[in-house]
Image 1 (cartoon, helix red, strand yellow):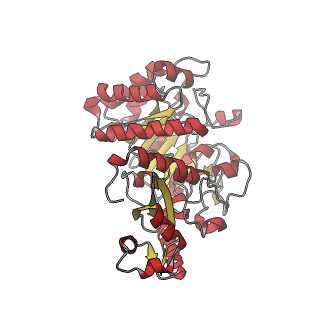
Image 2 (tube, rainbow, N blue to C red):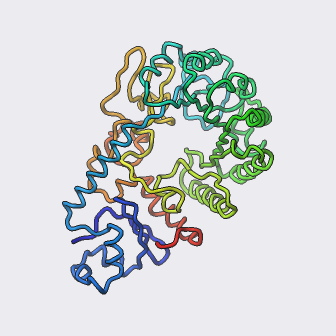
Image 3 (cartoon, rainbow, N blue to C red):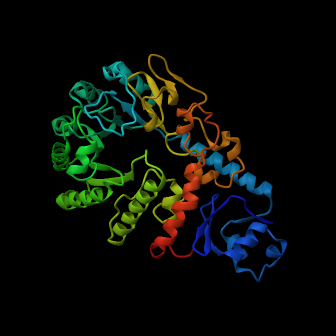
Length: 435
């Protein structure tokens, strides 16, 4: 009899929260109990009646008969997760790399040849053939998908494939002009980025040439809501703007309270930010989540930049193990106007992250971030964190020309050593009882 190796301990004041990565069970133990568990002392297991901790560990699935039993359980779990993911697919279409904005943090590197292209009707037809029955939902992306030069192809998509549902990730500048067309489509939601109040927004979300965009975007959001379209307002947080982002979010909620079922928000640190600024912004985001939860709201319910285990520990989601770091590595298919296929939004436009081609010929690469999983990374096979880390993000490895079949532990290390301890220690009163 032994305690499983697939445990991730998180320091919680004078205690440890032990996470069973095989089933999501959690138990709170003190330092002495933690030491006993780490040492796997024989006397600990022989104390059948005297140790309530041992009995609880058994009840929660922390105890197995042998290493072989644990390895078998882990292998079966990985196969189950892989099978479930094989049936999931989301499709994103990059209509063009052209954009009317000049945002300083834009990650898409587009040369002039790319900028001149809008995806063709034959490319759209090929995408639909490839996706076939695997997805009924498509996201229109760019560059900027809502431009005067993309209107014809959007009309073609809507006319040719009217039964599909479309979501749109847009800067929102031409949203108002596109409303008559969009109202004819089955729209899931439209994501619009607003970087805080007018002053802050107009420093980052600017037209080429430097002209401001705040007032026009806000007007479009209001008219879209009044036309019954669901709007997700994305806010890229920085140290300079995060307070104004929260203020603007609350102002929009109040102004459009009659449309509250159509308006939701996603506030997250700008992805290029790291270090102490990232820590401060992450704390601000989660403090805002808890504050809104206390009022009965569900603002910013899911922060996409975090591992799923974070939202599970704080009681926001059910537990589910992962074998890939995120949906970009096995569920996303992104088709661009160049005929290339990607799986990660942040990698779009960079040839180093291409996972295949679809036009004029269809060819999926055997080794890519799309095919990567913990079962293919040697270092992950015996790692206790693998099932809640997924091997870490391979994008940084790919962009630097490194072997993607190696782990990137940076995110998991941050989550275990800094983020989860912060959340547990500062929001203990709101967490589920029984840890």
